[in-house]
Amino acid sequence: MVKSAIYKTFRELGGFIPQLRKKIIINRFSDPNAHVFFGYYDITPFSHNDKKILACKVPINNLVANIVMELGYYNLDETSPHFVKFGETKSWCWQMGPRLRWLNKKNQCVAYNVVKNGKYICKVSNTDSGSIVTEYPLPFYDIDKNEHYGVSINFSRLQRLRPGYGYKNLKDNTEGVDAPTNDGIILYDFIREKQKMLISLSEIQQVEPNDTMLKAEHYFNHISFSPFSNKFIFFHLWTKKKKRYSRLFIFNITKMDFKLLSSNIVSHYVWKSEFEILITEIYNNKLRYILYNINDNKSQIIGSDILDEDGHPSFINNNLIITDTYPNLIGFQTLKCYDISKRKSKNIISLYSPPKYTGEKKCDLHPRLSRNNKLICVDFVNNNKRLMGLVQL
Image (cartoon, rainbow, N blue to C red; front, side, top):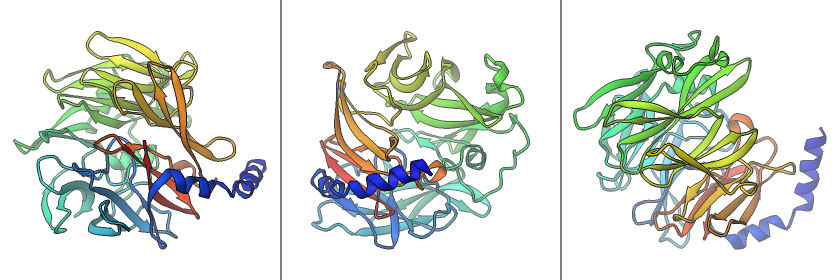
């Protein structure tokens, strides 16, 4: 009650915020009858020439992630861009969307997950014609930039154990099994058209186990290929008595082996180079941004006592990082830029998030960079609906 009253008071007092926001957000993408958003920050919605931006659209009065989502794009060359639909899906969630992405080797084509004939699969559509180019037998969490490999997990188990990150369409057949032997990370080879389970949940829980893993439900999330595509990181998570634990691993596809990078509670990630990755995690009971060198197993804290709130980071260049924050006590979440060499942080914009957008339905800013690193795309809430905005660096 007290928190809701504080939210209401600041919302009424903060009438100046929309006017300030208009000056900073150079373009908005919205629909009077729908939520418009993209999803997670680890995929860019910008086309290769930065002239189009992908978007997802669902009816405004339905916050249940099991309805038809329209997929489309906005043409940034237009004075007043309109939504151009090219596909749809029922397999999506509020945090990740349908893992919609541009492909590198198929011109004007995108990949996204759907449910078909009682299975999750991946479709590839041509955004110009709207035609289906091909289908793959698995739903993909990530696809490497060379489009040699895709990685897949059990999205139904992920949704059950981490609502808002998986899909609700199909029942989780592994429910009741803490760490299944037949469930894990699957690698799909696009060239050979073959799939292989790389590591099961049963196997991962046996790697340097501790007491919190006993009688806990295990799952995978946050898989991300390295820039040169021969490695990927993944989070091993487990829940016990409603408490969530996690740790970070890296898998080397060339060597077909993996190793533990961090046993701390990890949260978000971004690759800086082929051998460096920045992780937000709890270190000595404090939130820290830690840069790992996977070649020499060394790490360093970035922005100590400045970057002390969790966020979704990306590198603008080797020296500059953009990230965001979760809503503060009065409901504002901030987009910021951190300068590594100067050890200074600059707030770019703060946006209000209504109190009902929490848990599975939360609307994080999820800042995503354009290809030329001059624009940032964010998801936010205005007039009680989701929309996308562009912020100029």
